Image (cartoon, rainbow, N blue to C red; front, side, top):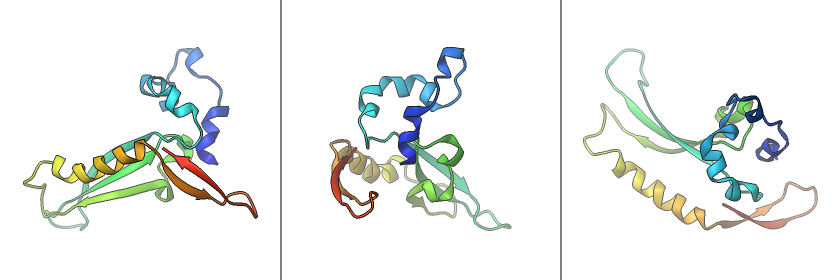
Length: 131
């Protein structure tokens, strides 16, 4: 439901300012795709962090954020999808592509859509296609 709120927002682009991802060029390039309900724009993030206060150990986290969500809740922990962990103790000897390949394959298959059961309406179920 929150992923559809962007459709009702006012157009900040007319003011000449880019206020959010919705005003940017990438959003416009995929406007045909995004106009359909249940189609989502995801952003892949890779961050390295030290899990311990003292020490030189670092871990990489690969996660997706759903850009269709309002900015105020987009990066809440409940809305972040952890898709991979790159183990330490330091940055990997392999390229990051070796960690991304399985994710890219899954996202490529999702591009064609997959069926899920929507139970958000009380007492009803319907099958929808998510892309």
